[in-house]
Image (cartoon, rainbow, N blue to C red):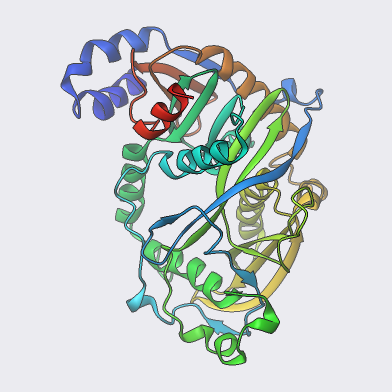
Length: 396
């Protein structure tokens, strides 16, 4: 426990000395969920509730929030080959230093409840990324680590990423020297956004000028604009409302709200040249799959690039078929059924632990065989919930 206690001091005490005794007390009450042995999650068959979009919101190119679908984009394949480096110097990158908590998601839920006149009931409300981490924590080769904050309010568990921890991990990653011949982390991040810019249009195909489509390679890359879908779904006994960014729609959103939406997730990865590359790609597929099924995204377009950032080919993946393809590869680095059963068991356990006021920390250390949960604040909600949301829910 020495390493675990040391990290608590670093993140909670030095930034807020008054929390010293709270952290010491909370450490003694630490709860742990066992990830191993994985066989314990193999026999059950947790059900997944088909995700249904109940609301959406957009960020514009200045990252201003709009409770509409104004930033919705449509997929149109890029011309190949393409240079993913073009425009790197003019990249309009989102400054995500500020902690936005769950504010945009909660504002959208307020608007939804005003429109429908009904409370948005759920066991857990969170971002898609948090559930992706939960699903992937049991991979045999997972080196994943994460920290989340949680609070309990009116029967619902609200979970967000620990912003300080996220930026500390980014700083460590950016300070690592890239191996000889490999691009920097910043450049590879840009390649992903460049691929998105090359692959989307602002309207359906026949309403988009040919000149726009053919000039996408010269468009300024801006990752501040986002379309985010808010869905109602569930894993096992846990009812979820989650929000997450969607890259594009394949054709158009259906007129009937109950019909599934043909979303597309856009991903880039290096060409597979050897067994090591294949193993890395298989781990990426776990994240691709979890991210997509959680929001009901049926198709993933993977752009394969070389080490210099040249986009060479595309591959279309059906989300539902990915676990089966990984299983047939023979490596067995992850199992979709185990991931879902694990997530169902963990979330059910978490709901029983975080069941009163205060702020909680959910943490998995690298290569750890457990997920830790402990309280860091005895009262309040630690800014996880916006004042506007608390006021709305308290007065309605």
